[in-house]
Image 1 (cartoon, helix red, strand yellow):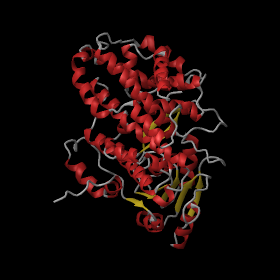
Image 2 (tube, one colour):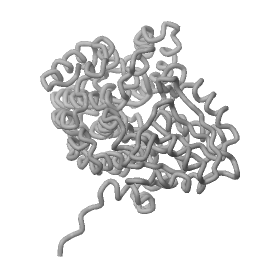
Image 3 (cartoon, rainbow, N blue to C red):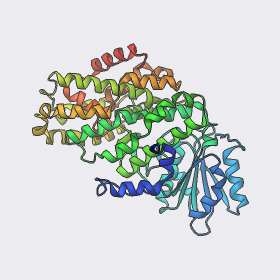
Image 4 (cartoon, rainbow, N blue to C red):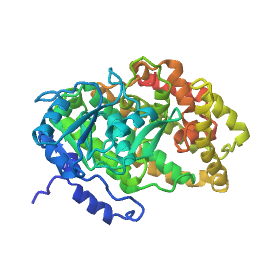
Length: 477
């Protein structure tokens, strides 16, 4: 008798009821959060049900606040926002259009954008966000600020993993922060729409997904060194379980093959759900995301910005390489002389690192406020850290299951025709080196870059050495 094949990523993502059962019965159920995504429609033609979905969650007789940018979005049956608006009108659902971003569809989830969106959506019976991950982040934040008004997300590209969770990446005081907002009531992913999205958007989603091969190791490391005790093997398994299958379809992403794109969209959704139940982005966000956010903070006004996921993909290669370097040095005794620098020593370094970004000092102040917390925890754990070298071999064995080789990531990016080098994305050499050297100074989250710094191997010379090694793989800059 043959065994039934294991469920695919799309099948797992669609069956939220089964996911809830798995979550409730796992060993970590008491420490994880409930799955708050109300429902998921994933597949060809599901956008035809948008009026039904909106009516199902709508509060009272309030109208539909449709949040979107200025970009036209193609589908097999016409422009997506026009199609959605027409479907709602045909069902008797009044719509108000709320545009975010400028005429070039450049959207930033900053305080001004949120204030305007909240005001424009006030009194709505449901918020409907149609578009990119940033548009969805704005929608989630608006939904939360308007007293949990129901929110439906129409995803128009498989570009990031943040559509399905209850967190938004917001620009606060000039610094990108992952901020708790709320789960969408419904997520609609029509594969007919996703496959017609610009291929670079879906490649960016592929790059974003590669972080699941490095970020979980950062999260487990944070637990090991006394920085964060929230590590969840269940969340990591959920985020990682179907990523290998996506890599096997990498060439299909380049070709916009429906099966490959549907697998990508489903795997990104499961990654987002993993972050939501974990209550943090750590299952899919580590060093590679911190550096990416720093690059985004340094972007020049008026210059087209590279896609977030595209940067994450290229940076995941560098994060994997830094992990390999740290493991090699640790095996050679590099953990026996960890550094414990004082606040007096590091505060001016942190502030100086961000002075070129913001001469007013506000960004430096915000980054120091976060980094100081991490530094305090590092000192508080000093007694245990001084014997870290004794516990490292067991941890190093765990890393075999959490990490893949940089070569495997480079191979995957090339198969998808995605950028492998940051300069392919228009990132300047000097900016990339600055972001790599200082990304760990921006937040209180602990990553492999922090450990490398405290080991004394992550400075400008360490960055240069890593980039030289990356160049041999055709990666890095």
